[in-house]
Image 1 (cartoon, one colour):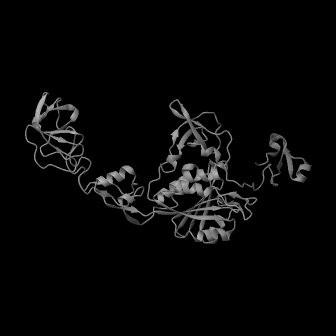
Image 2 (tube, helix red, strand yellow):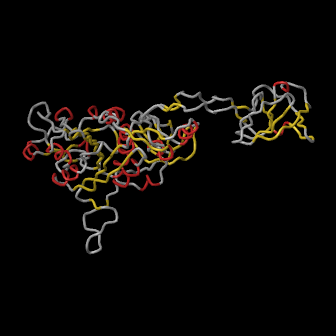
Image 3 (cartoon, one colour):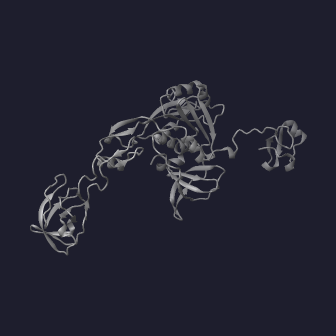
Length: 457
């Protein structure tokens, strides 16, 4: 903060000027650094290690910058339909046949002709042999006949409707209709879903359960899908050890911590559309970082944690620049996860997240996962969330906060969220029991983001 000097009635004494410090009564007598000489009680060149709030990017603006970092991968491959779950179609898929390919009984019952429609019950008809699924009977339905049909069976030529079996009774060789029947009742006509040649799935669609079923019903065999996006995950920090690692003496070395970030990134980014590569842990020196990046040249993206802020101890940016790459350090108007690194090394894009585990988790959900979806050929979903309320009032801050939230019921038709009173960017424990993220905006608005929606649900 700049010194306000005589305007506040707190001009420093000559002794204070000689020591370069003064006591500020507005801050409970805390000592503050003196500004440089320059008149009007203001330093000539104020030092600001962090960007001013106005210079920080909003979450929406940061997502735009991140998504512009890379384009969908080129290339495709052909897979059997049974091996294509979760993959992204690379070409439009037309129906190879009518769907259904013939007029089909929609339920168990009896096929009847037009002469039996809209007749007063009871109406006796001659019973014909049953037609099971997979065994069509090409003989036309004669006037006054009723043919037994099972669900999914092709109805015989001349069928006007199917009456379900509870709507009739059997009397010897006769079927007695007990209800009026209208034309087309309980029949799925040929081509009801789609006619042969109609595009049933567009390129860019992910093949989930319903779309795989549709593709199969349309007669698809092998399908053309985008190739998998090749994504590397990297942790940086000399203090990190692989999870479960111990020293030669069987103890955890002093000053070290387990790397929690790579397991989290792997879980968040794992997807049938993605081939993940573990690039390991890079120590805080340029050579170690360069060695990890050398193993990533054939990838479509590297997502790293740590070294995002650009301090003198962060070696990711300098190592990328030394290799001829471009680096941008962004400051976001959010908490946790203010620092974000965007870089490019030749054709390889890199996304650097903050190193604290909670900040890395939030950054991976908000930025890394949507970018990976874009690279894989999907349309990243917008960060909308659901309007919500907090169970306990909480003062909004200058930055948008993302806190672990548990669903605690409803209030005024909105989800009621419990969030921890105390929160730190390295405390994962509250997230382990959370249902999602509570987004608390500076204007006090609250939105809920379920984890399954953020992580590709």
